[in-house]
Amino acid sequence: MRYAVISDVHSNLEALEAVLSSIEEERVDAIVSLGDIVGYGADPVECISIMREMEPVVSLVGNHDHASVGRTDISYFNINARRAVIWTMEHIGEDDVGYLEGLPLVGHIDRTVLVHASLVNPSEWNYILTGEAASICFDRMDENICLTGHSHSPVIFSEESYYIPREGKELELKKGKYIVNVGSVGQPRDGDPRSRYVIYDSSRRMVSYRAVEYDIEGAREKIIKAGLPHVLGDRLLFGH
Ligand code: ZN
Image: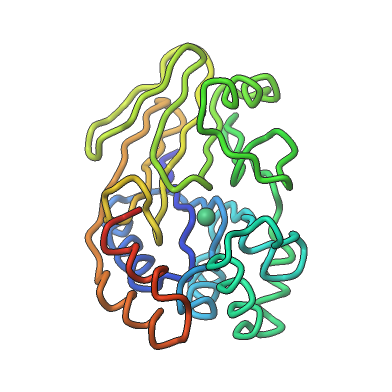
């Protein structure tokens, strides 16, 4: 099966639309979403509505989704993230809340495990930024491949090392276990402001990263107009 894997849309409608039209050209069998549909951006309702219509084969919950329906404590969020969560709570409807509440923490496709943050207590939203954090997650994996998001930075961890992937190249996940962070659609943080997603071919164990240009200025202006912290819009320009 050939999947398009998206994560961390973060209410960025311009980015989501650009990514979906790129995916249309990829002839995938299904779409997978690894969570954080909302938070930070100005279009939570529209992004949830697109996700619902699209019916990804798996759609997971992220920490901002959880927080926006009152299920995750926001005291550990930074001030701007917290303000965005509160703003999102005030702007989404009952149906949106119901959808977000129904999303699972962990999913599976073709001997591949899917999680927003880490398999180590998924609802604690631990980051996998180091080999040590990856190795604790590897210990929890019955499958050989884990697809994840949360840090907004594309990276592939093997059991020995890690690799920062470039877009376009097909990468074969050879023998052994891997954690593949697909990056963020709506708020990249690796210094490249383009939207990211991954094409994952489960039978060939291949991943290929995509980077998509979108109307960053449009998304930024909406954030500022909505009364959200300006920094949440400004950071889109730089991808950090
Ligand atoms: Zn996120």
